[in-house]
Amino acid sequence: MSIYVDLAPRRLRLRLSPQTLRVLDAFLEAPKDWRYGYDISRNTGLKSGTLYPILMRLAERELLETSWENSEPGKPPRHLYRLTPNGLRVAREHGVRLATGRVARIVLGGVKN
Amino acid sequence: MASKLLAAAVRHSPPDSRCWGNAMLRELDFVESDWAAVLWALGSTTAILKHAVPRGVRAWLVKHAGKRGERVPKSIARSVAGLASGVVISACVLAACLFGLSRLSLVLFPEWQLNQRAWAQWLALLGMPEAIFVITAVVLWRKRRTVAAGILLGAVILIMHVIVHIATHG
Image 1 (cartoon, rainbow over the protein chains, first blue to last red):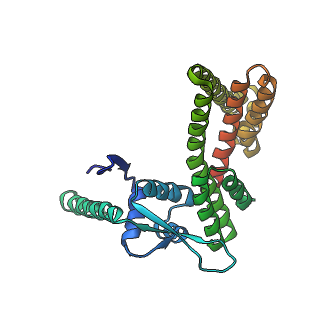
Image 2 (image 1 turned 135 degrees about the horizontal axis):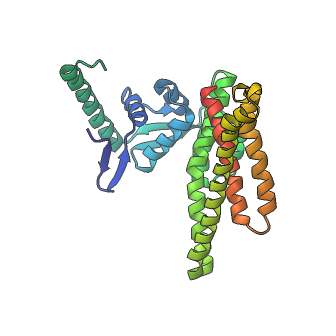
Image 3 (image 1 turned 45 degrees about the horizontal axis):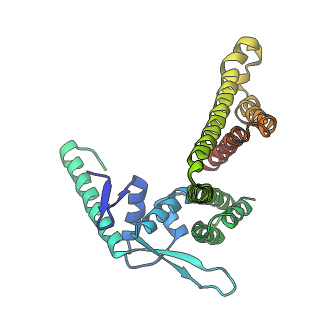
């Protein structure tokens, strides 16, 4: 299974590391919802130094959209994240491939997870 | 201190990195424990530096190339070579300090068992190299400024590496 994704039409290649896949997986749990950075960090177990470069790369490649939430008056806004339709497509494609690969490994090799 | 470090990194970062920095800084308010907040701030500072430094270097190169025209590639190459040699010198100093601790101390002072003492490890890993880096950089600053800057860069990289290692491994 290739760990690179071609992002047509921009011809950009995104390396999908295991950590990036974990982030995409976390977004797939509720694809329409906006998520906070700290919540994603807790869900994925990734530290901020790993998580934010991934979010930055996804946003640069237009797989992630960002927004600011002014929830508490007098406090700075919070940054929110959600996958774009293109990001959802990539995440779902890799989610399926990952699941297929996992099942194949279990069936053929008897390896658990 | 960690949050101040992050705030300073955000303040001095370019605008496109600052947006992400403010996002990380705001999330710090929601981190439950103090220790987790320290880790969050250190990780975020690393992320900001990773994002901002390459952009800053690129902007600097573009700016200087625009000002000086055709002669720039040579001067840039010389600066980069100076910086790289400084970093290589600092790596050699670090390797020499660690070699001194792990091998030389066993030969010269076998009864002291310095390689098993925590303070000696910190001295060889951080104290001695950093002192040598600073002294060498001060000595070289007037005549070989780029090499001195490279040595200081090596010193900063070593400190950052130790901070990140402590933050992630305890």
